Length: 325
Image (cartoon, rainbow, N blue to C red):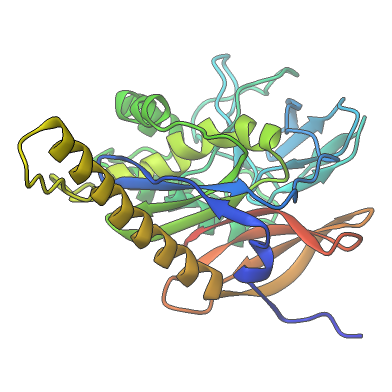
């Protein structure tokens, strides 16, 4: 039987509900929560040890009892004098496996040295770099993302630098704010991210523990960078309070009405997302019943990224797609 060419978001989000929207500035997050017992507890969070045996090669060592999924666009900016690295593609890593990814990329152009093995903090590449990195995921060459990083930095007023660390240092305060103000909710396994009222990304993890482990990396650098780049003064992403009676009861009624309107908008957005389809690209990796493949949206939203499907359970425990920039 030939492999199908596309999949509906309705199928991917089966058993998934949503929580109350959260917003910081011009960015809004709609939590996706497990409502149907759909979590895959057989996948560990990506708490891996990382090193770089050579420029353009990242070694991933996973000592957990279950396999893990290295997120799409994972990267490591270390304090030591070493060349920071990232991967364009996610990766499936077995329990106890030590795996070399020789299609990784350096994300700074001047610093030398290799990363010594350790549990280094992980970031996830900014939206503005992820589509370029994904397109280069099968090519070897440690400098392959430098030009894209230079263009990315120029968009933030950082001229002549092909190193991601300059962006991270210049905007540290704003990026930290996203982590501080957005909160995880009970049973959360994913999120829909919007900037200036437009869909920017859809993220879903196998289970609560996995999601908790990657949330800071997603909201801080990956999507926080996009919100900073496309900031609009006083963007109206909250439903205003319409207080008809200037009393505590009147304020409570206005707040409840505002929440109902906002949840209605959220439900309609989620219905729209569920109606989309993703075109299935190449299968990049296989591990047991799991397949990691590249996917994209053919519509006006133009999302691109990767997902993991389980042939045994017919589910999609991992999805990471964002707008192509």
